[in-house]
Length: 332
Image (cartoon, rainbow, N blue to C red; front, side, top):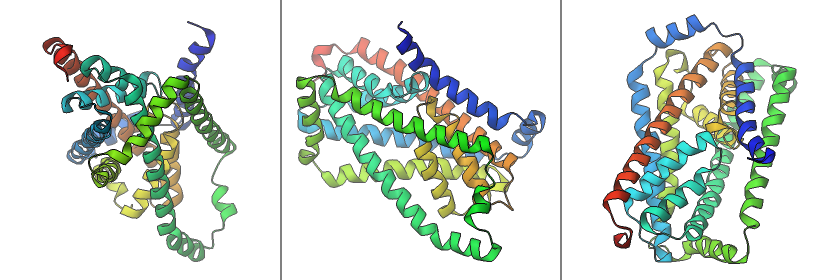
């Protein structure tokens, strides 16, 4: 393995571990586990996982819809398994999931890799526009709240920013830099593959013009993010101290956390914790302590990551069984 490739594999884990260590270095772990054991409402947490699984399933249905205009009709179960597996493999190597799911679909149902990759690029464009739109709406809806808070408390922007330590500023800048670098890397990786591949990628992107129902594709896109939000928001009910958070505030925290996941660490580990903790403390400085915020972030992220691992294991096992039982010549 080359040094460059090794660094790509190692650095995301180093960054994640570094941020997590900095955030949780002063945590009283005995008290932490006591809260989880005695004060956490596990029913709500388990209920939230339903929407995490549903988000991935709807993503698979949308992907299958986008492949139809290209003459490809993979099995629904195969696309779901490929999505499950892609999320799990991205925990090991960030952003490798797109390649993994396209390869899985090619091996299982004979869908050409470049065609499916083109539709994945389309998904990324649609999802990026969706999260930008949602975040803009979230911030605009909260302007009156911020204005009222500032006028009532006499707090100005400088005093709010003063809540950040020097290390906090450094971590924020580092996360932003990594998110930008990750975006540039993805663009370069897709662009430098050659003329034939670019043409097939273009076909995948333009395939939206010919989907059976563009409205259904857009509905799936909306439902994916609704499911993601419910996956996050319902977990709030697992902790009594999170009851003060309004749905609109939770939506804003969700949007900021979604941008934090762009930093290439396993499942956003570290940057996501930092973003969620920071937003909760800034929005509710008198109601949610920093220790409570980081407790919430760690528990939710850990359990949601465990769900990704379990779904990935299921997807891999089901794909292996399906490939063994179904001859490739009968996949179409």
